[in-house]
Length: 322
Image (cartoon, rainbow, N blue to C red; front, side, top):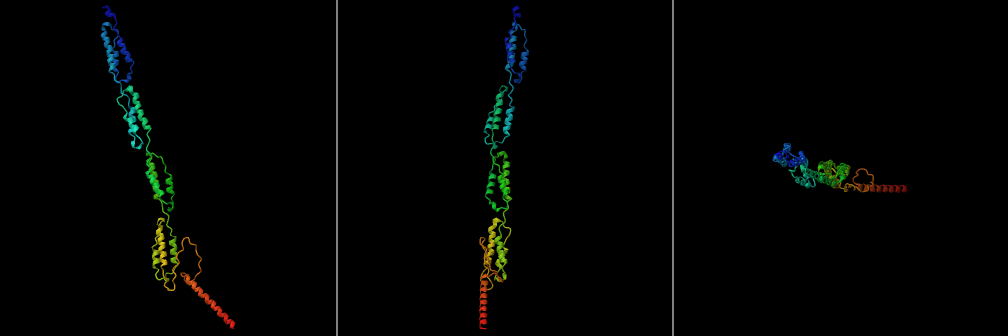
């Protein structure tokens, strides 16, 4: 009886369980209170007759340890990385598959002891986002506008510098996030083209033909109405792209002049055609009276000359007879 009452109980299992508890990080567990309660319930000084109570204390600690649950791993960084990926427009990037793969590789329900694995998942997503490359901006409209500008003949316009400046201002290498800037380049070219003004058509030939008509006496001709009609048909304000129409007006006047017929049957020569643009101007004999028939004037001059010579001869003979 004395031995039973004085031999201490064996606390080896209790101490081992407590040592195990002390090795744990209580902050890793959802609820550590049961373990702490079991440890605090240990009563020292039991003798061998109460060994079962001591063993129960050890078991209570072990059971509390076994019932512990790790806290969940912190997925804050993972969720933030996924949110960043979801906020992106995948259609803006050349290849979005690496980001999608990293997001799909996330494994949930990891506990706090696996936090490094969870952090690695977050890092993989971030790395995939960092390596993304934007698609190139679409220069289709810019190229179309430049092609339109190149198809124009700059010499037809009063000032082509606005178009040239807009074309020279085009900057290549923009990405899809800068599409608005690229579209603005295209619009600048289109606006410059729209603002172009054609040079005026050349009315020099028309004015020359009208001047020739104005120099004539319409009363000398059987019908001058064709010339007048051709002159009235002249439309001013044509531009250089309508030069053919202006030239046709000039030709209509010239043709009407060529078709004129004198009232006097002896006058057969028609108005002299306008000299070609490259012809060398000819000298003309000074004329009086009707200047529209040079040939007739030459004949009259010859007749007058002959009469003068005849008069001189007759006068000489009379003088000699005296």
